[in-house]
Amino acid sequence: VSMKTFAKVFLALLLMFSTTGINVAYDGNDYEHMLTIDQPWAPHTGKRTMSAAVYLAIHNGGEEDDTLIDVESDVAEMTTLHRSYEEDGIMRMDHVDTLEIPAGGDTALSPGGYHIMLMQLQAPLKRGEQFPLTLMFEHAGEITVMVEITGIGGPE
Image (cartoon, rainbow, N blue to C red; front, side):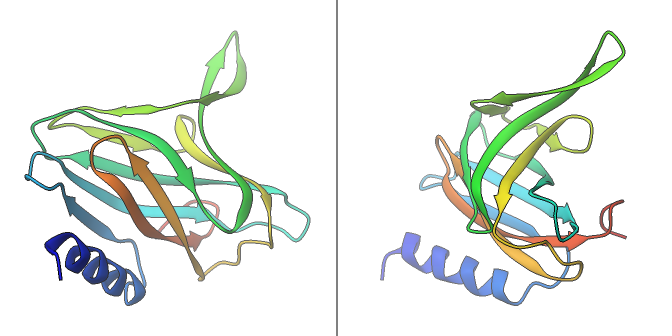
């Protein structure tokens, strides 16, 4: 069994038994890419709500910049990166293709800023449940985390 396969299996088992905000680390093949995904969460939705946002923090402890290039989840028809911002007193939201994760830096996906949009939800997001979300990075590859469904204000 290769070390990469072992790491993926170990990560999957770790995620299965995680019940609160999680801290997932992934080491690239040569330890140049060390990403930590901290406390992924999404607020619960109503029965008629068709979209939701996911928030999390990414720390790049590696020596090289990385880029979040795509996101996927089975809970929605479409999963994309977005940025919210205020312009002329009006809140706006734009799709972004990628998100840079600087070496030695932190990138926050939080309310009012960058976030992951889940559009055309398969079912309402119920508080206390979790769902998998796969983040695809240019260098580190795929990292799957479990997203905690919380109240509107986030994790307590």
